[in-house]
Image (cartoon, rainbow, N blue to C red; front, side, top):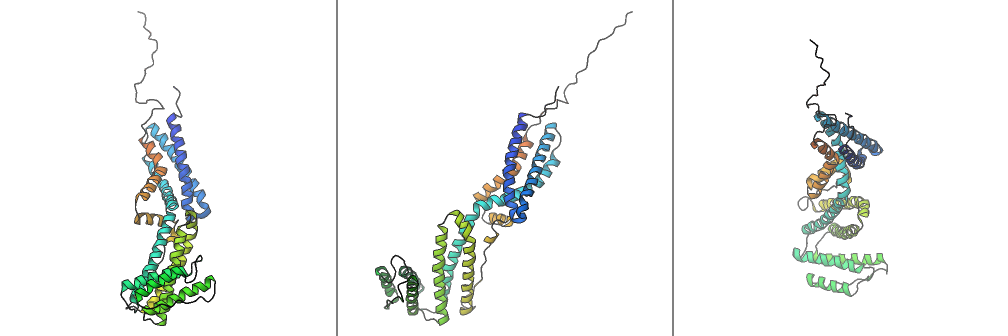
Length: 343
């Protein structure tokens, strides 16, 4: 009987293996790029070809009823490299924007907390609740004065000034801009802020400059970060790292300056660093997934298992076939003519 070399099952498994390994090849290429650069495509191709060859050998031995444990362990060894690279590529691709936006919002909060902490350590008049309300009104006043559509101290700005006067119990003098330009209105906003601060704080010149610079930084980065978060996903991915670096640099400078002016007794500051420059690296992907373990990490993990080990599991679970014939069946005895001697 002629031996059957290829079955419909083999054809189906072959097509499925090529599809899965092809996707794995591309993701492995992307995942290894941060380590091997341009060589990652060659490494990914070699790994994919090895996996396809091992799958064919495992299927062949499985069909013959031979043991496949040794080949399976070899497959697992090579597939582990692809699994790690695939997880890095997939997790980074879909989580990059979320990682950046989370970091940007965290920096925004850090600036606000720094402002609150420093103000709490300064010499001031009035309770903290009133001081916080005044600070909010000052920020609104500065925004209103520098508003391109309605600059200067107009009706809305005067309403804000009225609310501030009620809070501090003193009369605020509306000042004039040095010129009718954006820089002139910015200067006006800063002078109005300084006037109000002098009414509620008893500060040294260094402390005045410090709190003013912190307040300006809070306004600046709140505005810039919020504007960045409104952009498209690609724009956030392209611009976020630069903004994170610049904002944290200014944050650390202001924090160290506050520590130097106020002293250890009043204010302690620990500079912070961002790990977002590690986004795209294999170690960071797994570390972030473990620290923020959730449904997305589970989905990516399951997808990587399917890409690299799914076809192996299917082959190992397939029943043995008897394409080479049944070696354990009954043996047919050839029959010939029986010669009976004549007596």
